[in-house]
Amino acid sequence: MPDSGMPEGGTPHSVVIGAGIVGACTALALLREGHRVTILEPGPPGGEQAASYGNGCWLSPMSVIPPAVPGLWRKVPGFLADPLGPLAIRWSYLPRVLPWLARYLLSGWTEARVARTAVALRALLRDAPALHADLAEAAGVGGLIERRGLMYVYPDRAAFEAEAMSWRIRRQVGIDWIELSAEELHQREPALDRRYGFAALVEEGGHCRDPGAYVAALVALAEAEGARRVAAPATGFRIEGGRLRAVRTDAGEIAADRAVISAGARSKALAAAAGDRLPLETERGYHAMIADPGTGPRTPLMPSDGKMSITWTDRGLRCAGQVEIAGLDAAPNWQRADILRDHLMRSFPALPRDLPAERVRVWMGHRPSTPDGLPCIGPARATPDIVHAFGHGHVGLVAGPRTGRLVAQLLAGRPPELDPRPYDPRRFG
Image (cartoon, rainbow, N blue to C red):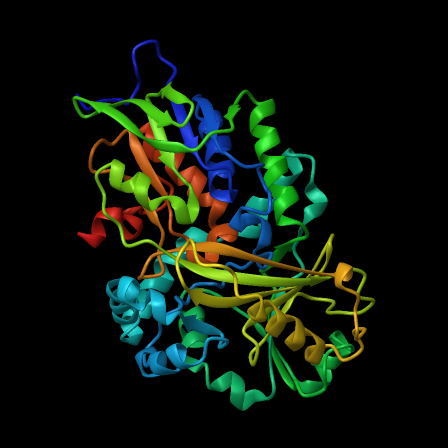
């Protein structure tokens, strides 16, 4: 008879390492499976130290195209030469990141590979705005989730058609959109610069008005439902006879039957402690936010020539994007946030110029990214009592609810609601 995964005494105690969006959703899903839950998080949930705090706010079920696509390898010299381009690699970090970068480029070498990734991501992201809306209502912050669509804007139809492969694959996995002419676009978005003359509106998309406050509310809900939160970092595990006995922290051991590694970009060392050497990198991202801007988009949108999201939040008008490969410890390059701010100004010409410093906030955070654009969700080599749940890259916020449910189903030994094989950490060898 297979092991049920139930410890003696009947109620498993699960430690969730990390209180970002994935950890928060996982903690709630485990509570609803009947687990006792401890959340390990050294910083404040939803705080500025977390990727969940500063992301682009989009709940985008259409984010199924991985960052690496065919022909990207031709642009690598430019990434190295331009430290302020939309994707930059710091020379000093290149020797360390080369193996990851090679895998990254190979993962999107052909359209067929990109399409396989899109199928796997679609399964993880499907119905995400509705799942988030349910969680937000339960946490008492239903107003933070809006489902009014997301828009990609282009100078003209030719610029849209230059991305034909991505849109073709989106269509193949069941994503629909409405195409808007210049007149239709500017009726919807009168403040948008007139240089944009075409748009694709994806009505199933949504956004979060304050990701930091949302994550904090989900963690508070988990605590109200019985979870315990410990403000300490995890440092490793005590595993005996192939079973987890405790999670080690700076403050001592926490006895545990199960553990989930959902520490974002800082998950790599913990994964190694659980027997898996996984190719996790940080794609450092930036945002700039203008308080009380007075104008902006009616629908969250992404200009094709800026590759950044522009979204209203409860804290101001946020533009988020950029990818910088420079590791966890390098100092931020705030010129990258300035680039986002300047592009935002060009996209909405009526935005006030010469803003005082206190009205513009900038931020840098760490997307936890695997080379193939898919997260690691599945059991550790050292013991099935530990499950990996990290590496979501650009889809961490949108993928949080279904990731949490999948992790809880795996730890409960129940049939998962979607095929977990594409996310299996063992795909990396």
